[in-house]
Image (cartoon, rainbow, N blue to C red; front, top):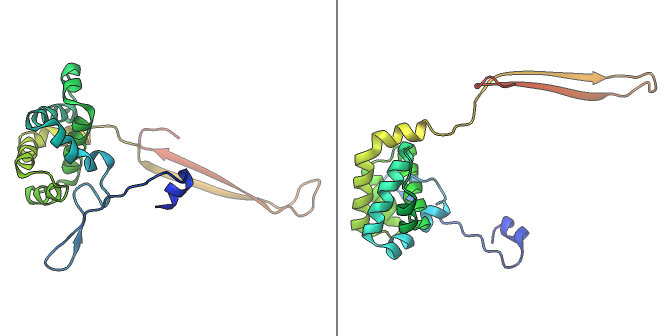
Length: 181
């Protein structure tokens, strides 16, 4: 149990699924989703088995639409189920952000024990909508960057009441890329 789990109580269970791959040269390579699989990606294989291939294809179609920035069909989303849609969206989004190659996708999705026929459906969705999804993911919500930093440290040496105070005060001003201070 991790330290965070201990802080949450005795019965708290913190799971952390890691999948790494070692190349022939001996280098360790993380999967396209990062060193630790997000919960949505970890549960994706079970959601596929529960929903079936038809629901997977529908979930992939809706995930591609969502990543392109289009409106989603609410009844279709309810019919598919939240875990399958969230997992499909998380896998596609992580693959697009990492600019994952097809061989990496096959290897990493195989490590999640996703069947080959389902992996082929995911690859087909990636290849059909990769360019549009890339634009959608890149134009998504982003935090502003820091453009300029100004700082100053003032030290109060003495006041009228005390002869030696030596209290520092720091003034920090950040200019963000969206113009905010």
